[in-house]
Image 1 (cartoon, one colour):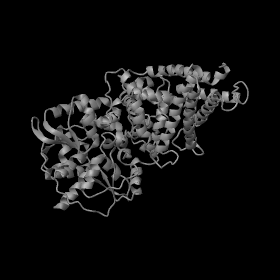
Image 2 (cartoon, helix red, strand yellow):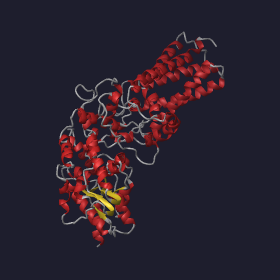
Image 3 (tube, rainbow, N blue to C red):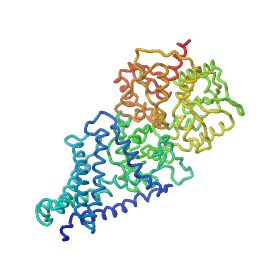
Image 4 (cartoon, rainbow, N blue to C red):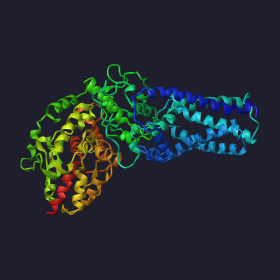
Length: 623
């Protein structure tokens, strides 16, 4: 075989060598990050399963927002499998056919089959973007990618057909084959060399990111892994100011972004017109030089972008490359808060109140029981015991939260539950401080709460606040606590199932929908308990377009109600609009913060009732 006849295969081999060199060059950026504990062998062994199972489970879901007939989940999965699978098969087959002694007709036939598979995928890629590209998809070099993939297919199809004697012999030094060779050379460079800095960067970085993921427990499938990594408060720099302040596998994750825009379509802040686009945030983090300042004076990322985030993890849930957007936001916030003292709006005041009074509102912990004087709640003194410790939380200081707590207390008494509260000894759980980046205040509150709890005896903690649930269940263990923590929706469901709460299930002509709290669903994986509880009341909720694990945030999460970054609309207004779209008369909630935010929407709007209030009504009707 003449050297000129091997031109397509030599160009492919040269492109792969250049891709390897470019990958090593790109790896310099990743190695510049902080150290990370990674199981290299175990991660590589788990890579095929994570790709075939976890990635495609996300890809198969339709993207959030209006349905896109040409870009639904099934179509995207077919497109990706055919294009990527065809490319992965075609490249080694072409090298074997053109550069080894295994060359033969059977290899050429297999190569044509792989290229045919890839050609179908490329057609789906083009159909997805033309004539009108969905707004969430990035343009630029991504719009040229279908041309590169198509040129690669055409180039190697011509070579394989020539090897099989189909059509005239290839003459790569003369037209028209010379023009095809030029197209093929460009295509190989765009695809393979582009794995270092072009639109195909996600292919190499994405595979490595899945293998060396910062949260490998996400792939276990048993429980959502969403607890924040504790910050070493004796570090030279608190939080992330530059890319090098992130762990090396987090930098790898930023490069894995395929810019599909699913995070953008899911983000409640982006939907409300706040200055946050999670896709752009990750793109900015990936493109910044390792020494570039990200936040602060002259930073690449605007502070309002960080503070607009509700930490709801909708972006993380929708990302097919499993990128951890929220972890990056929190690390950048930590630098803003702890190093620069630049928490915005009312957030700075709330953090000051937490440090001074151990409560967000600034009231003393001794006044936590004022609202319940008539209820005569039992206090759990040191050395005493009870079955259930009711964690009141900041809801005890808010009129709306007190309605939920009153209903819950009355239900516990009706069911004969042995419960008590801490009263003034209960401090804020610190979740708000942690989401605002103040790890020092969170660590102090967590430690003191753990010490307080250690001096009491109880079987379980019960809370109506999913933020408290998440903090006590998932983030306090790092500070020595280890508790069985229940959300009131699951606990009330158990009481109903045991027959300890007599109900009068009935029907209503009022349409009810349920708003899933982010910290109950995406943070703790429970979307069924509230619905089963409603069904026990004879209520079958109508689902909003954004529900269950894909629920949209109420606007409180991550302290967004305090940072108060202006946007075109308020996030709770967007959520209530989604409830109106299904004709809801009642929005049931399972979080006092959600109740506050949704009730703050200007009337007319649906009534907002907590699950405890609905159960209490059913118990009262049972007489």
